[in-house]
Length: 143
Image (cartoon, rainbow, N blue to C red; front, side):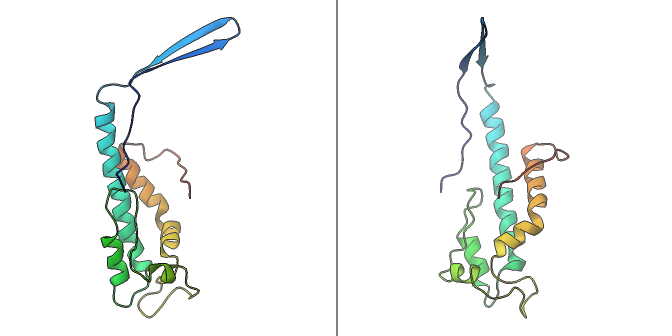
């Protein structure tokens, strides 16, 4: 998957008519906008990808640790897509087994959803901090 890119228009004129008046607006981005924000966005996306892998590890079923390693091998950090590529990953993820095992109380199916429920706000705060956003602002994350 190609890394997401920030695209900015060179400029745009918006004409709005309100009653008898006609308003004209011109939008222009600063020359350094794309360069500044693309770097921040890329660093923030790399943080999210690596945190998803790291924080999911205690939730992933464990026998030989190959399922965990398949997530590392199947993910291009910074691409925005985390994938566990073991041939049996889907079966493990959607299995009817209960969570918890002799290798850890959190391990079991649907590890990403359970990790997200536990750590979503922490990941978003870290990504916002890296991107240069304000941490105390309220935020929403689409599931």
